Amino acid sequence: MAASRPPARGGAKPSKIPQVSWREPHPAPLVLVSGPEEVCAERAIAGVRDYLRAEDPALEVSDVRADDYAPGTLLALTSPSLFGEPRLVRVSGVEKCSDAFLQEAVSYLDNPQEGATVVLRHTGASVRGKKLLDALRAGTGGGIEIACPAIKRDGDRVDFAAGEFAAAKKRIAPAALRALVSAFADDLTELAAACQQLIGDVEGDITEDVVTKYYGGRVEVSAFVVADTAIAGRYGEALIALRHALASGADPVPMVAAFAMKLRTMARVAGNREPSRQLAQRLGMKDWQVDRARRDLTGWNERSLGMAIQATARAGAEVKGAARDPIFALERMVTVIATREPFGG
Image (tube, rainbow, N blue to C red; front, side, top):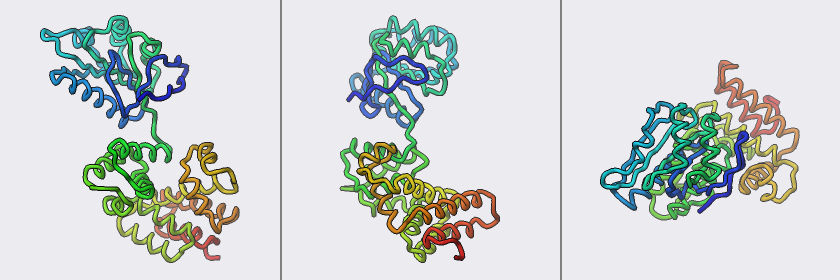
């Protein structure tokens, strides 16, 4: 299924070639895999290989580094062999390619070899290779582009994980999906691996209890449990949850980060009466994130929210070395947030 065309980047010319989803890759004489998200790029390149191998198990696969390129290699690897097997040439590091590779690759666009598929991996980390990319995107060589933009926002990670289960025709409960994404908030590779483990191991639908069973020991899951309890105003439960998380090996730094993330979302949503979907689109969030933040705001006002944010900022500095006792810093933060009053007040 073709994806929408990405906007031009860094002065690049708009792409005129077909845009293909990394989840549903297919071969072409030239395949540009662009963008920084390595998990998606690896999936795309492996998908092209699997597609070609399914068509002909005799596929010849070669790997080339564009930054350490021996002149003549591209033509040698793409030229028909004695028995005419299909060829796949995977080129990495195009964003730091040598002059020799750039010159030969641009020339190759004018005369792609029959039976050969050349995959060009460009992370977008530099403008190196722009001449090649511009020519390819203009339609020279009959190529396609598989864009792999960075997945950084919470909503993007939720979409990624939901796509993993949808592709496997596996149902996962919304609460389970949120818990899973929270557990791997900082590592997309681990999130992808966790999704595949659940898909492979679990029979039937995936519930929140299943995610807790598999990944309940993750620092981020514990951190969000503590944050949810404190923000709900359940002071005693929040302190118990905090001590349990710390006894399980939770790191104070991501613990504070979980609080900061939730409070930041609450602050963005506070006082806004737009419909959830409209507000979510404007803020780059998901509908459920807006709905959850609005529920979290029950009993909060501008004063208490501002005080909680200040307490979290202070704790963030202290757990990173500004104070001798990070545990006390966490307990003070939890106290301020759960009681919605100044510490000791």
